[in-house]
Amino acid sequence: MLKLFKSISLIINYKTILVTLLAVISSNLCYRYGLTAKFPDMLVGIAVVFPVVFSIGSAYSRRETALQRYSDFKGHAIAAYYATRDWTSDKTNELPQKMRVLIGEMISTMRIVFHSKHQRDWVENEKQMYTVFSKLSALTMEMRAQGVQSGEISRISQYVSKMIIAFDNMRMIHTYRTPVTLRSYSKVFIYIFPIIYGPYFASTFNDYAAQLEYVMPVLYSFILVSLDNIQDHLENPFDEVGEDDIRLNPEEVGGLLN
Image (cartoon, rainbow, N blue to C red):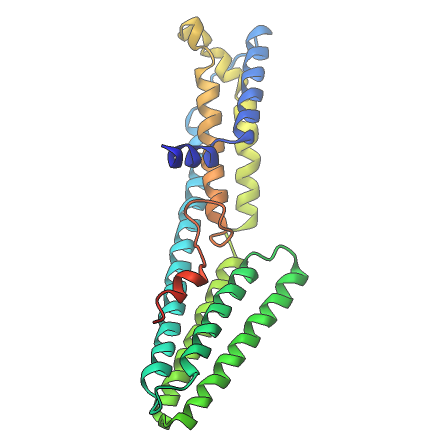
């Protein structure tokens, strides 16, 4: 039950209440001063709902791609750890422990990168991420001294390369999101439609009982703003605010490295 309330609080927030209140006031004023009109219902679907649903679908698709890239990253990192543990002739060397520490550092640094809010912080944290990749590349070369053949070293280098590619794919998903102009367009109409539709809502007052006069403006406001809130939470899959976000947990991955 607590989880349900948390989910609802992410969808219905102060913006929902504010727009609903403005829609109710607009409808009341229009009815009081006789400003009524029969606007077409389909205008809301064409101008607002369709673009927002398209944005939600696009954001969800990006989230799914980011999950795949993160899975690729984890899979190749774990494979690299197993290589340091099982491919060397001396099983008492420190390479597995060094690899475990590096993998945890990579995921922690990646989490910091994707949580960066300012361009300067982003650049510095991204440089740190590639510094850790450099350490990982150097560590693979230490395997040569532990009896690992050149062909197997080459395979480990491919793991490192694929981890870098997976990280860069996630970085692109984080940077390039749903078209900004489409988002701006949707937000403008989402917040003004329930208000400018006041004459339409006022024209329906006589069709309902006195206790239900404001059902339409309230429903319109809740539906439109809630859709916008859903899209906002899906837009950045790495900020760990919404329940559908990707959790970068170094402890979780570290627990798999035995």
